Image 1: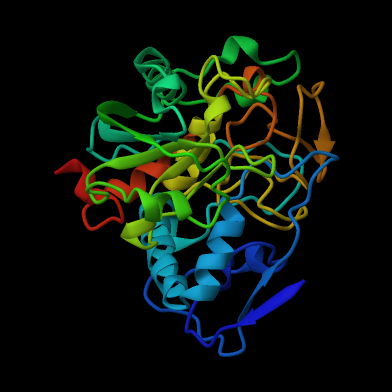
Image 2: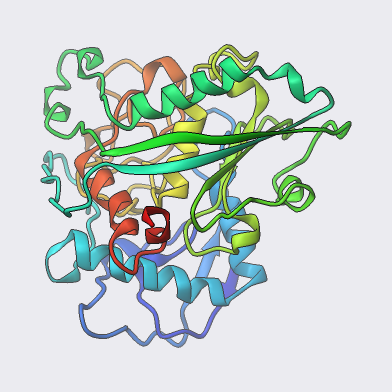
Length: 343
């Protein structure tokens, strides 16, 4: 475990990576909490025998280490998010236990939020990804953010029906850019973004499609980071019809866009007391893989393995929750971290 010591007047609930006590803290509505000996801890993500497919949290940890000012920016975003989504600024996350928590969708007056998308295909043969494949990915994003498939919920998971939601967020393809580049592996250090920078990231979601390497399916930048690296990177084979089965139905994009819109992994990248800051996602002690048989119990409750922010097979994930909806949409409120996309 590596400890990065910071001296900031911040609340513990914005910890990056594994922070065992963050779940018990609150952000006060009118004042920050002075924790002069506060530190961020990073460690291996908990998992149930699978590989680490998404590197968004690792990228976030690296960015915070390189730019300590990012921590304060993320605190401000979290502060604003909780003021909008919870009473008296209290955290929206679970504190463990077996009871199901229902969260009401907040009427924020924003209507359907449309996000314009630029796609950058960076491959030795950039034409190997067809226009129809890119459009198919857009269709998957729009379906996943609007139409939870509760018909797939297994017997006994009826408690989750009330949690599944239409986020009211949609995506429109604004342009495709093709770059023939012989590089065979781009890694997760934003090299592909440096080579082919994002276009108007304040108003557009930029997605890079390339070969990442290391078994990584994708990574995203959380809101608050450098605009020069803002966006989502996807492994080519994860697009619909790609060669990365069982992760080739386009759900990696759904997962990574969730991070881009401020969602954490459903298990909070730690054990049972680690939080994803969402009340209606049950606490979990690790990521899930494959198509788990329900109930897969951890932390005294059944894991929501069908949530897009887990690691299960594309065919076995099919819902966001109302709490996740509210958290994402808070970014678009007046003054929010991604509110410029509405202009």
